[in-house]
Structures are given as structure tokens and as C-alpha cells.
Image 1 (spheres, rainbow, N blue to C red):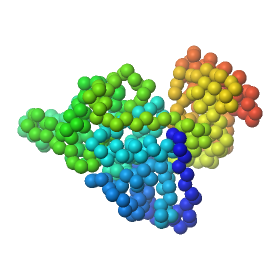
Image 2: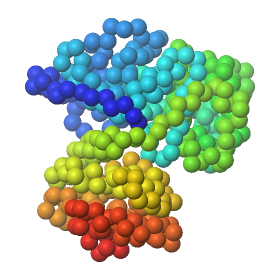
Image 3: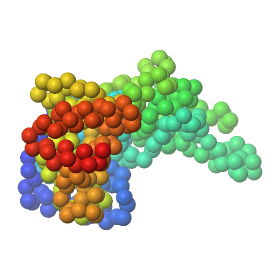
Image 4: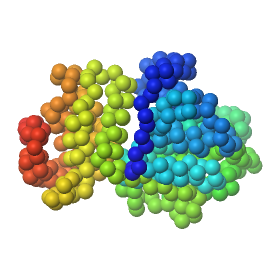
Length: 386
């Protein structure tokens, strides 16, 4: 995540307009987490109004509008689109351009680099539906990707379209939408290869019925994979050729990562209705600094080398640490995030291995945190938890 996409402050009139659209398109809900197309329905609707560029078949928005939806920006009517991804614009442009071709898209990166997040928002902006999802696990079967059977109907009437149970992928093909496959490399290799014919021929054979389902225009697949899973179930060369691979990197600068954490924490705080003040930027910056230093193995001034723990210490984990701290401050404190509130979550994120990581953390605490100006409260809080 490199190039920061800056937006200007929303004028009062456009803010009011945004609230009106939201009210009209999305009634209040008690859902813990709405799908992207529900949560950001107002933004998609505004983009549809101003989007005059060419739209590929069955796309709700043009590639330009999809990119704007992901990266944020102010529209010509003054309406502000919030950034969903903060980073290199070119990465998102390549991902969107891939989906306009006959190639599927594979988003790869270390844990916590927003692969699933980007996949969901791309599907929401392109198809208006991010729910056509297959979750990859070691137990994922061919039926989860292709189709299954309603065995009561199968025994009563024999093989028929009425007895067939469509998979999310099949429904995406029939409706010209985006299908999502999470954690592709977690799926057994022989099951992965079920995708080869679908991605190359855009056809799903149904040999039991002597029939097939052909994909309508707009159909594509977005898969995600964790590069920490290398060697678990590597993709065959035939399947790799059907994907265009885009690597989502960790944030390149501390400021980018701080902004990502701040935005996500504020969003989650609203969704969870936590009765606490928004976290101070200084507290977020301290957590991000610790994560970045332990990831890189060197302090931000480049003067002190330090050991790295076994975990990834991703941006997603930094968001979790801040949210946990806010919950503690809201329900068991004064509502203001403090070092004592984040200490336990911070140690829990760093110390995954109780032996190796504990030594790494203790050394970092004594050589870096203890000596850093203004960090005395965090040092004492972490010592107390330890």
C-alpha cells in the first residue's frame, strides 16, 4: 500500500445529500456487519448517477467508477466517496482491468493485507452482490465449487435440474456476476483443478444430465490466497495460467498504516456502538510503530536491530488491538483509550509462541519501549500485564 489517495473535506451540502441517499437506500439495521453493497449503497448510487463512462456487460459501474469506489475521492457534484483501500492506485487499476478480460483475478499477500476486503468491495461495485462466496478449507469438496444434489428429490424423481443444488459459482455464471473463492490454496489440489474448465471454457458441464451451464457476460472469479500457505496446496501450472495474480503488499509508510487503522477502527466502533471516545492518534501511532519495527527487525530510526516474532503482525491485527482497547476503555474505564487498555491486546498480538516470542517481546520492551521518550506509561502497563 504505497500511494496515498487524498480526499478533500466533504462540503456540508454534499454531506447532507449523502445522508439523504443513505436513508432512502438502506433502512436502519440490527445486523452486526452489513455486506459492502448494503453498507455503502449510498456511495454506489451516487457513482451510478455521475458515471458516464463505458461499462462492461452486466457491470453496475464503469472501471473508472469501480476504482474511485475503492480508492475514494470527491465526485463532480461534491459528493465524497470514502476510501476502502489506502495504497498504490496502480494495484487497484490492474485488478479492475483484469476483471474486464477473460482472466480471473488472484489476490495474494501475507495475512492482513486486505485481500478479502478488496475482493468483497470489487464484487459489490461490479456486480452489486458480494455474497457469491466459496470459503476454501481442507474439507472443501468439488460439490461446493460445481453443484450438489437435493437427495430427496434425486431419489424421488431421478437426476433433474429441479434436484440440482447450485453452487455460488454456478449462480455467478448464470447471472453474469463475480464469484469469490477465499483461501484458494487451502483447497485440496484436485478440487482446485475443478476451476480449470470453468475459467478456460466459461462452461460448467453437468454430465449427469447431459447438459451444461454457460457463463453469461460479466462473470468472473476473484480468488484470494495467503502466501504464508505456500506449499500447503500449491496451484497447478494449468490453474495458475487462468489467473492474473496481483500482490497486495503491507503498507509502505507508517502514515498510510495509521490512516488505515484509524478509519477501520472508527467504522467498527460505529457498527459495534461502543460508548467510547475515538482513539487518540498518538495511541494508534504507537501501536503501528511497534508492529512495523518488530516486522522489519529494526527501529524506525534505523539505529537499533531487533528480533522479529513468529507472527505476521499485520495491519488487521493492529486494528484488533485498538478495538480491544476501546472496548476495555468503554466498559471498564473512563471511555478514553489509554496505554493500560491496549497493553494486553498488544502482548497477545506479539506473543504467539510462548517461548520464542516472549523473549523477543521482553527484549524489545527493555531496549526500545523503556528508552523511548513519552512511552513510559506504555512500558509500565506492559510490564504489569507481563
